[in-house]
Image 1 (tube, rainbow, N blue to C red):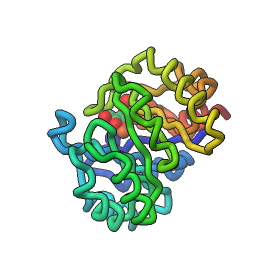
Image 2 (cartoon, protein in one colour; image 1 turned 120 degrees about the vertical axis):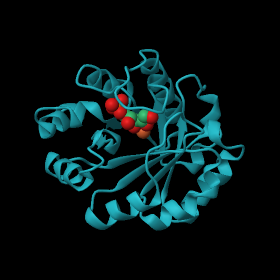
Image 3 (spheres, rainbow, N blue to C red; image 1 turned 180 degrees about the vertical axis):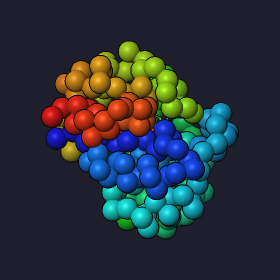
Image 4 (cartoon, protein in one colour; image 1 turned 180 degrees about the horizontal axis):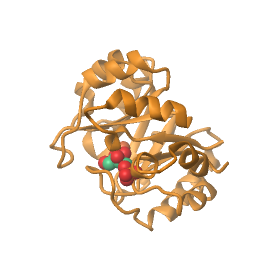
Amino acid sequence: MTKVAPSLLSADFCNMEQGVRMMERAGADYLHCDIMDGVFVPNISFGFQMISRLNEITDIPLDVHLMIVQPERYIERFAQAGADFITVHAEATDHLQRVLKQIAQCGKKPGAVLNPATPLEMVKYVLDDVDMILLMSVNPGYGGQSFIPAIMQKVEDLRTMIDTTGKKIDIEVDGGVDMKNCTRLREAGATVLVAGSAVFGAEDPAQAVRVLRGE
Ligand SMILES: O=C(CO)[C@@H](O)[C@H](O)COP(=O)(O)O
Ligand SMILES: [Fe+2]
């Protein structure tokens, strides 16, 4: 079944716990935590301390999306802070396979992330090393952007690539996911949908989560 990971980037940063409780009530499967360093992306969000506190206050698995250069420098710190999934951008490291191994060695679930213009070839030879591939459907850095339509085909192509190997790897899609494109995304093969504005901006977040999940 499709999982929904609301992005805390769309929560009120002065009331983060309230945002977490709202997502617990809404039935979120994961909490998506966007870590931005102001170098890989033109924005700065939050870091270890936030992950650590989130881990203390909730049982929902933390899906930590690292938008930082040379993520290998900080894997242990995010693992210790309580991340469950750690995803790293293929564009941000020269040694993707090594970083994915490092995440697994820390006992966490590794994922590779591709920006919209990055070809699927970049993950073709690391499929043994991931639990998840995250396809960005906006250029990373901000919430509330519009879904790039070409990514629908990319999801289909990645599903074919994964299925031909027989491996069980989640396809997560992040950026501009909403009620209008979620059905097609699930049909294309997405298994985890990240949604910031579509859930936090909804009148009824629980209903939004159900629609995104296809219930
Ligand atoms: O990683 C990112 C942005 O860089 C995302 O996780 C956004 O935070 C998703 O927000 P919406 O596009 O769903 O509003
Ligand atoms: Fe994200």
